[in-house]
Image 1: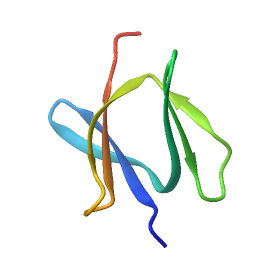
Image 2: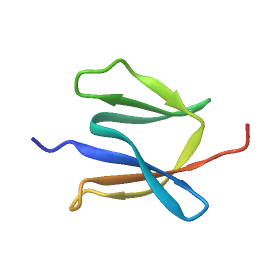
Image 3: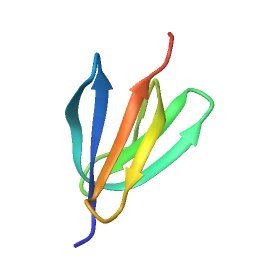
Length: 64
């Protein structure tokens, strides 16, 4: 399978928040993400980097 892991970068540290992501979609509230067997959820963040070779997506929090 080719799913990616989504990380949230806080203070220079990247913490994994979702493994096996199948959906990453910008929306008005932030970024909608969904795991392979999970319901979609919205993270108040913006996309910082996408590295498809390493299956990594890094998000950065936005102001509330």
